[in-house]
Amino acid sequence: MGERLLDYIIAGFWKALEMIFSGDAELWGIVGLSLRVSGSAIVIAALVIIPLFTFIGLKSFRGERILSRVLNALMSMPSVVVGLLVSVCLSRRGPFGHLQLMYTPTAMIIAQVILVSPLIACLTYEMVKHRGRDIQKLGQTLGANKIQSTFMVISELKSELFIYTVNGFSRAISEVGAVMMVGGNIKGDTRVITTTISMLNSMGDYAMAFALGMILIVISLVINSILYTYKEKRADV
Amino acid sequence: MEVRLEQVSKQYGSKQVFASLNEVFESGKITGLVGDNGAGKSTLLRLIAGLDLDYSGHIYYDGKRLSKPLYQQMTMVFQTPYLLKRSVYDNIAYPLQIRHRSAAEIRQKTEAMIARLGIEKLADQYAHKLSGGESQKVALARALIFEPDLVLLDEPMSGIDAASVRFMEEMIQEYVREYHKTVIMITHNARQAQELCDRIVHLHGAAGGK
Image (cartoon, rainbow over all chains, first blue to last red; front, side):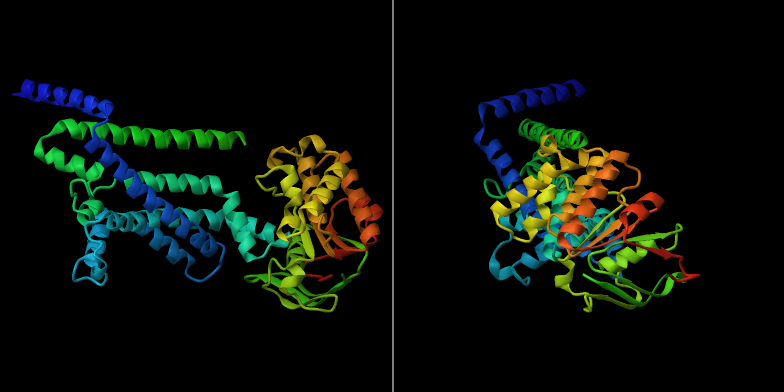
């Protein structure tokens, strides 16, 4: 029994390699959608969250500690909770039901934006609080106004902010709960790498699951390689 | 720019740094600020620079209170220079760029300043990779390039080589002579205070005021 299962898994593994290198349309369609959804989510989150939390981080105000704690807590928010919230909002009877976004890639992007925003917000806020304020003061002594100072801080901390953004992408593309709930894992429409692996596993169809798993690992390795190279370059600079 | 302090007091929590300070820093003069560690010299410069607004009393700049346009007319160089993660050229040009000066003016003034420093070969290098003395020279050049009316120097010449110190002293003297601007500098160096400064102000901290 055990041997047969092992043979089955090995056969699935070879089939997976064949699918990857033969350019299987369904497989690469799923990969493409995953990259589009997570890529869009991370770009939107970074463009909104980084300037906003740089600006907030440069301000001294009562409740700084509370904000830090809230952001830290939100960072570990379970993805199914995000999925549930977005589902409630986008479902037909929800406040944004009329937009008919449920079970679309847009809904998945919204869920992933909400999922990665606290991570980018928390890391940006803490970094700016600790290092940005001195940079802002330098800007002030050179005559920079508040907007110029804010951009100066972002420019000076761009290496760290880039790393946070890439970490956010890693979290988004490997997440399964929220996109499953709001995307529905519809074939050819909202099926992404993680939801497909989850589905195929429950079906016992390992070939495509292996192929997608390998691609996900390669994506993860590429991301980590980019980060490693970038960190090395920064050490040289 | 004349800077006048009236009954300026500063405390951190329950600790009084200095109290009821009255002083006038004249225009076109280099004033040396001396005193023991903890006397509040750096704190005073930060108050004058408008980096710390939590104090009592009044500070007047040519008879006016601190306002946004005044920030554009003064600068401060710190003991540990912070150079932007850009080239030496871009660091020196930065104050002109944020003032939206013309490209020709930025190029001409920056190149002249780099030539004055004698660091043409380093112009394209990352500024934060420079040695201590070179870093301070670039920080001073960046502070002076937009010809501020008030220059605040928080011991920028401590811990650097003698040649760089002499060079920076000459730069400061030339700047005041040429543009008739105000310089307030903290120094622990008796020779520097005597040779460079037109006037010395002793700060004794909370116990003695000025």
